[in-house]
Image (cartoon, rainbow, N blue to C red):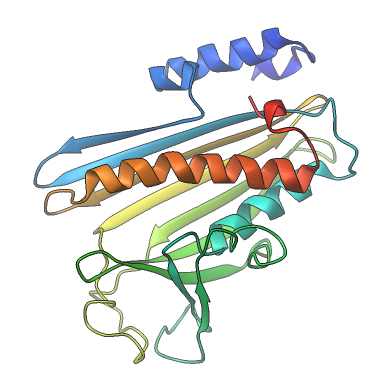
Length: 244
């Protein structure tokens, strides 16, 4: 929109945050917010907004580096994660699995998973052991929209892979083949201008039953947002304070 033409001062950040306030008031001051709704059925929604100054950038192609940092982060295990990447997104029962165990450093280079390749589909199962296995299997897709050679936007979308209608890989137990949530739609948008990079993400999840472990989910969302900021700052070679 028009706010993208506002130059390189703090007024730009203020205008973007004011615009975001109309979507979610918490985004006027926070990097992200999570909202729980309903009881049974129930839903949760997360939103993330990162505004990155290019003033201290010393790299070329920052949009590509940012996209790679984010998709590598999403593909990697975090603390307490068990991550399984399928070989065949059309038939999860076929092929080998790539297995990754999350740790305090598994989401950072050089341990992190490779960046996702644009226009490719990837199926990933992420599990944790919280009173038994709690897993979610999702399909990820990245793409780019180019209005022209200089005006480009990157997208990362993901959806729950329906395991009630599709068989899972034989490696997994019945509890691992059950999605913790009944459905999710997630969209992350990455945009570049002359002086700024913008990351906006929204994730909608629903359950037929009530949401469980909400305090754990909320704590993890806050920690995940901060880890993502750290990964972006490291890959772009900028101070963390430049992500506003």
